[in-house]
Length: 356
Image 1 (cartoon, rainbow, N blue to C red):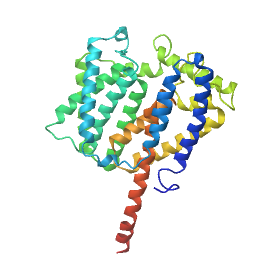
Image 2: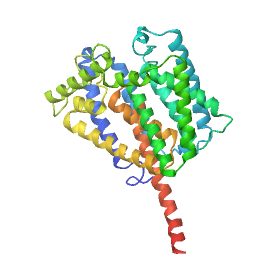
Image 3: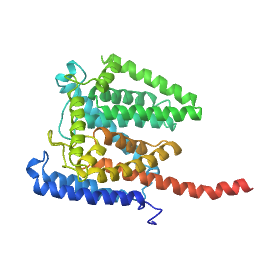
């Protein structure tokens, strides 16, 4: 691949340069201020250096996701299995949260409301993509309707903002693409499916779905401690940046001793104005390329999962502890590179047709 025009172009250089600076910050804080960290220095080495940095380099490769024949089947089996396990966990071991706003259960560091909501949202969006691509037959419609209801129940009861936002935006994108194509039949199928999901959820007693979700998004205070904590993290991270705007202050927000759950704020807090601007430039270039792929190519589940990574980076993302988000950034450039190659290959054919 050519350095200037291929995957290893400006975005890859920005990625490398940012991580060279960030690794200096990691080395400084884990060696000299380890007692002030909320997470162990070993985790910063394992997650930040090995998974987020080194492994992301391997994601800048020519991987044609839309040519994976068995990918959809494997993904469907995995998502259905995990959603079934989440539903069993919600029913058999709910917390006191069920009394007021849903089931937001805690399993462990990786099996938490955010992860569960993400898995539920992926299955729901996956089904929407299959409808868009005309891959659901009349015989399998009831099966996918039940799966959509299962994922809908899991998504609402876990009440995770990022996955809910991702599901809503992804479904709106699919609907807009269908409207632009004039696919009235598919729109009617989706409308009937949504009504069916609502009926199933109503049967199980989850009635005030809209109020539940709205409260989760706009309510703060005693009934939404996580939102209040998130706002505190944002405010404190910004203050840390202002205290050391040139060099940055520390790997973590110093009061709660955790990452600020917003990667732009975290880059400013940890690396100062230069590192923050470097990350923002990489983020916005990656976002623009992903937007191009989403709007100009066929709807694909993997590109939408990458889209989730961009949403998550602003709500719960971490520079150090969120390696999957860095993969999403890298794959955005992979998809864009493949899009430009296909466009270049089609251009001579189009010119030949127009000439004749």
